[in-house]
Image (tube, rainbow, N blue to C red):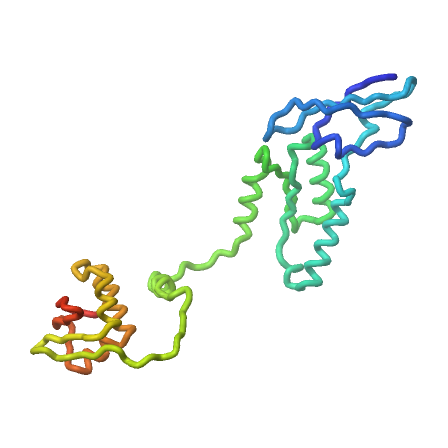
Length: 247
């Protein structure tokens, strides 16, 4: 029995399909490459006496036996059927796993696809393992992103201030009230406002600003103004007196 060794630059012996040449056998694959490197391997081929086996008798095929061009056509049809607007979007075709095949084979495949798709569809040879073509793919994607004018800063601040979610609950009766306790001095009494103030240190400017916003949403500021309050007057809540100057 003759024994030869087939050197592979492909994925695995499981991807090999053979042209019938008689009875042959494949031995165990011996790897010569590491993870992240282009695959280099040897697979012993055992043939019957008198049989001549050459490397060109073997080819690589997808594990599922599918045709990439047929797969491409199927995807295009599905996109168009789902929404014709998708079919009008720009395309970039990335041929992946280029590290698993010889460079000339990858370039030949890319040339065939370019001829088929025309100049409107860039065809790139890529490999995530060896980083082939990844930078070029990134540049192509970025080049096709529409450029919009920068939004005014005020719009961005207003958008960020909006709550991501808002919960609406049945309105409850007012559980607090405002009292005038002197010239330029007011007192707000009630569990909701007292609980609010107990959570924050009003000596801290940021905390006080937050309390003021909450009081405004609760209607406390409006009630204070109805009682004669002016910005800068003293307000007492839960025994804490502070100067309230809502903006």
